[in-house]
Length: 363
Length: 274
Image 1 (cartoon, helix red, strand yellow):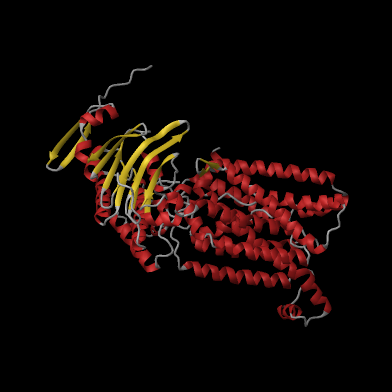
Image 2 (tube, helix red, strand yellow; image 1 turned 90 degrees about the vertical axis):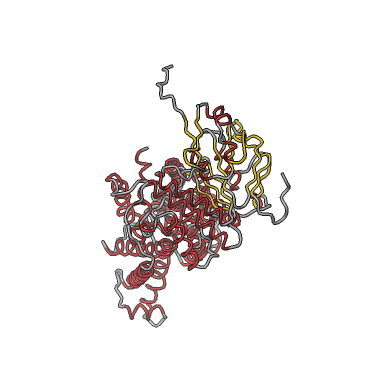
């Protein structure tokens, strides 16, 4: 239980003197970084293209091959990458805020698992039952099922973590472990009844990748991300107040239940959407808000938009790495984020044991 | 007890009953708090003081009885509106994130308040609690007492912001002097008196009876969920009333003209091992 208690102190690391003015610079730097990575995503690959050729292809003036590469392969991939970064980073920051625990991450507390279960159920069961759904409907069905799965898990985790009007951290993390075990088992059962083709499909899918989604699904995901991101960003003041605890947040004038419902719903939409298209991609929701907090401090007014841009940078950078490291093979994106995120998570846990200079601990 | 008129400024509880875990936390509690007065709620642990405060703040709905805050049932008011009408300092305030002191103090100020006024209010609250030199310091760096005062400053800023918006009549404090040294206890007494002088009503739970004597116009003595005595400070703070409740001999004296001291006379004997 020791290890579960430490999470509460992690907030108090770093950023001893954060200044509000710095925030705008950080946003600008992150925006430039994300733009550069976006351009690189379009330009780099087995067929490298100069920036002017990329723009020509985007505008439809390129050669047929260039246009095909950009429009059929790289642009949907880029848009999905942006959606993944935005959604997972915002979902991570929002969950961490509501649960007052910096270790909350859509993957770690089982939300991604729930979304995966929903999506896998659709893939396998629609194949088993043999209903050939129209493609347009299918691109909605997948995110909808993933949203349901994510929503159910968030609901369960929030409910389990509620004790005497407060959210207990240890219960939350343990609930996440349990949810991951349950969804993992259910996915395993579905895999057991699936055929060989499906098996191969979601062996890769469950490791997370940006390359697999087609345009209709990508458009749906972009739409859902555009819907949920502003909702989550608008919860900045609520998330600030929730840091006081739920009772005190209510005293300070926050409609706690409404804020939590709103955050849960938007988080389920965001995580469900990107997971249905890209598979469960871990740790972006953990790492992005943490990096921002180290630089900028805990105010959600800056933390949320900056985490969003940081998430885009991380997702695009990780995707570039997996595409360029051993071309033309593409290791799954989820492997890359977990490879970096896992040690980061460990570092967060270990770092906390060193003690903190000065002052009392009031968490 | 007069029924509340529409638009009347009054914090009232009538016939409050709260049952927590099978036992009566509050049993037929009546209380009226008027603007401009400081009322101290005293009593042993588990007497229901914090439960009463939770009912008055709107955080807890009583099983029976009514609470009226400026003539409205808190259950019918939004959290935002309640936050404008009253500010609360919790018994053990926390902040899970290392906000800067000025950020923490500003948390309870509604967005409706223009930024420059919000900054002024926060600055005033920080200054009055003697935290001016820590304004830009992360609260996780503060000592226990400074941290507690920072949260009191937050409640104060919320109250003042409420007043700016035409409300802000009630300040509810749950042990505001716990973990404070004597000079800062004195400062908190001063803050409560100043808030009352501005026209707000202050209800504070305290354990130190001498402090209650210095702070309050009226004292409410609670025991086992009931109010056993309620009235002007000097009438309630008498050995004959206090001793049966605290089960300890108490000396009430006036070592300085106008200043009451209530001293518990601890026996200092070892407990018998059962």
